[in-house]
Length: 246
Image (tube, rainbow, N blue to C red; front, side, top):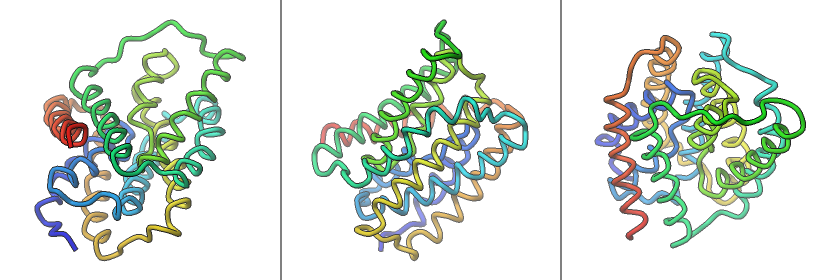
């Protein structure tokens, strides 16, 4: 069992930051494990449970604040959930896993470092063009989420804002629900071969829940967390480079 104590402050910080924008934090949890040289493959189900906990708290908080839009959420999850399950059955391994995870971390770092405000594109917001685009994006992100052991929200929320489909808070609310559903699908696919290590999960889950409660509360109040975003973006960037160059 790895020494978890040095990891807990970063896990708490990651959950705080990510839940403030409706995310579960799987990318930062994997980044922390990578930085501390903890093997991620045996802990993929642990990460998914952590993801469900953080994103679930954010989902509740943002929904209670009135930001959830079911009309926006449903077209994405209709295809993302079954594809997340499929991705969980066909996970990437070895070098392919390291490269794909590195790219996911790199995208997360870029999102945090360079896109505090995502530029908006004038795309259709309703009708057949919107729904067709949504189900295709949902399928792609769902498979990537299942195959890499993340929820996919780190990609979905900037897409929602960039396409002009949601405000930042609406995107956070939709992304949190998206993450919970995809993470549960990926967890269902992976549990038969990679059971959850309860001894490892316990302390990590405490840090995640504490961070998510505070982060989602701050997110609802829209407090500025730009400095923390940049710091965490640097952590993700370092972890991404370690994966890509390993």
